[in-house]
Every structure is written in C-alpha cells, then in structure tokens.
View: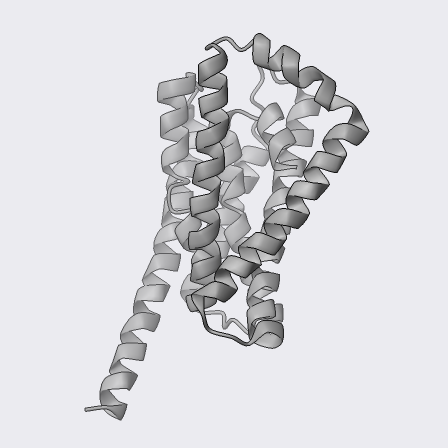
Amino acid sequence: MYAYGLLYLPVSTYSLVCATQLAFNAVFSYFLNSQKFTPFIFNSIILLTTAAALLGVHSEGGSVSGHKYSIGLALTLAASAGFSLVLSLTQLAYQKVIKSETFTVVLEMILWTGLVSTASSVAGLFASGEWRGIREEFAGSEKGKVTYVMTLIWIAICWLVYSVGNVGLIFQVSSLFANVIGTLATPLVPILAVVFFHDRMDGVKVVALLISILGFVNYVYQHYLDDAEEKKATRIEHP
C-alpha cells in the first residue's frame, strides 16, 4: 500500500499523509498498550489529522489523475494505519508474550518478521508474474546498471538499520515513541522533494507542513514532560 501510494502521489504529499501514522498509533497504543492520552498528544492528533485532511481535499492535477490521486491517498492512509498497528502489536508481544529484556530478543524479532515478510514478498513476486520484468527494468535503468544495484543495496542497508533502531525503541520505551522518532524527518521530506524531484510546493502544502511540524512539537514536548517527571520520581526514591 505504501508503494502504490508513492506511485500515485507526489513525494511531498505522500510524506505528509504518512504523518497520520502518529495519530493511528496513539489510538492503537491507547487500546492495546495502555498508553495514556494527554492534552499535548490529543492536540498532536488533531493537528496531524487536519494536515492530512487539507491534502485530501487538495487535488494535485498535472500527471496525476483525480482517480489515481484518491486511490493513492486512501492506500497511504491505510498503510499508515497498518504500520501503526504493527508497532503496537510488537510492543504488546514484548509485554505479554516474550517478557524478556535482552538485545538478542530484539534481533530475533527482526529476524523472524523479516523472514516471513521476505517469503511473502518473493511468493507474491512469482505469483503475479512480475519477476519477468526485473531483467527489463534492470537493463533499462536511466542511471545505469551500477546505480540500479547500488540503490537496492543501500535501500536494504538503510531499512535494516531502521528496523533495528525502531524495534529497539519499542523494546526500550514504547511503540508511540518509536513512531515519533521514526517520523521526525517527515517535515523535511517535502522540502527535499522540491529540491531533488522538482515537486510543486504550493500554499496548501506549506500550511499542511507547518501544521505537521506543530503536531511533532506537541509529541516531543509531551515526552520531555514525561522524562522530567520520571527523573523527578527517581530523585525522590533515591535521594
């Protein structure tokens, strides 16, 4: 769903819609992980939802038809919800099933989920017949074969590093915190998309970008308050 969302949406719009995963994650964390709601978290959910709604009613035009734009928007929202659910379920697995606090557990979680997802992807690739187009795609790469291979290799490495850090944060803190850290760079993506992919940055996107930043600030400030309260409680218990 993420892949098709990116196919039908400009990078800048896609990245801002992905920010809604924080709102989804807050809801799932509340029901599955007993995450408490605070005014700042609630404000963040409202702001991020507003930013996504602005983009939802804003048609891109150009090479993206209205029909494909709507499909891309719906798929990206669904992917964000699904990804947030996975994060909350991962935390739930640590809390209720695994009940172990070692780095080996983090690696095992990444290993087994990675094996399942790889097997599913390979099976889908052959079942759909899309494997036949890999050689043609490789040979017709605009940047050359070496660039094509290096792009795939570095994508794999970056995703591996991300997975270790993401699951580690869920293990050490919470799925909500991992989602916040993982999406802190989202406000920068539309700017980079304008620089590298020549996306159009109009007024609606600027407003949505600013609203998203405010949403992130609310999340970060809430975690700052939680950390300060925890340190204060520690000093009281161990003066």
